[in-house]
Length: 182
Image (cartoon, rainbow, N blue to C red; front, side):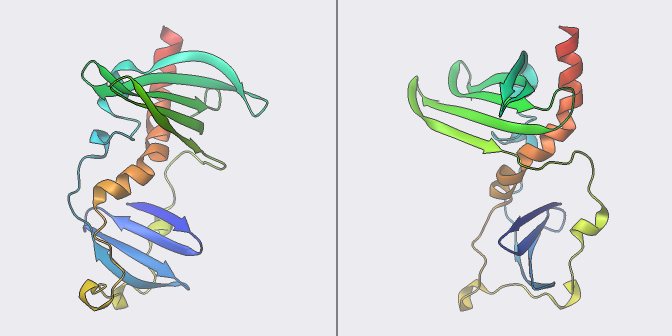
């Protein structure tokens, strides 16, 4: 399960039940179904993608916002064609992400840059209560035909939004061991 919070609304994604629950005002307002759940590591933005697992390299230390950080780099793409050059900055010797950039190219032509900054991040497993759905037994499925609020969001879209932070915490100890051994 994944929990996302924006503007006072909490969304809990339950991949086993193929549903996401929208919580506001201390109770479940409605739930929607998820579709097409892929494995999180098969998504491009995950930090356990094939390219990341097979080509991520520890690039030493640098500074970010005046602090020393560890730098990790790798490329993602289609076979020999690089479509993304990734840089991940972490707290030294900890599974705590700080900043990530993705330089996006299409067949060698610069397209743009995407960046993520984590202002707060606590590695580890959150308490089970984070995934509690208040008034779940009274929560009804949103009816899209009658002005409902479900937008046919696929699980792939949800996982893309949240997989990076979760995978950083899971993968960082292994990456640090590999880097120090190199």
